[in-house]
Length: 184
Image 1 (cartoon, one colour):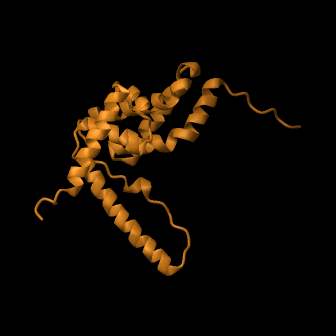
Image 2: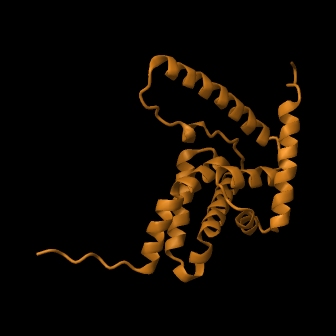
Image 3: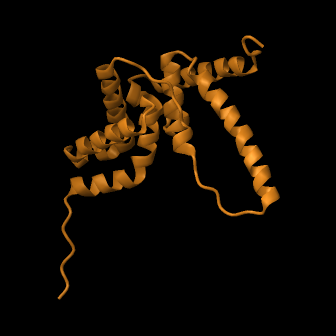
């Protein structure tokens, strides 16, 4: 005697789909704001709890931007409550285990990864030197892979403004990356 599969309501089905597709990107985004993995996971969990309480037809068409907006607002609430901002440190999220390889090739890969990691570390430090709006837009675009339209919806600005902000941020980052280091 086999049991019939459980009947899912639309809210639960939407939640399961959203979890599968957006849990990791939302956690990365929340981490970029909070710089603490546990607090980031809490913010993402709160986001999904809020999603489950929504009417699926109201959020399904704009699910990605809705999730990032709610997650962003939750992170900002957490920061406001703590009354402090924390610098971004992405290394914990991006650390991935390596597969087996021959020793010489593995050494070259490790050296290449170390060089790339150093450049990324410098880029992240430089991003922190950008004005707050530019920092936020860069995180949403390049860490969370959102479209200009989605970023505009999240931040309440036009897509043209998003494009201008990204252009300005990239121009400033180029200047910062090519400028001689202070004290050198």
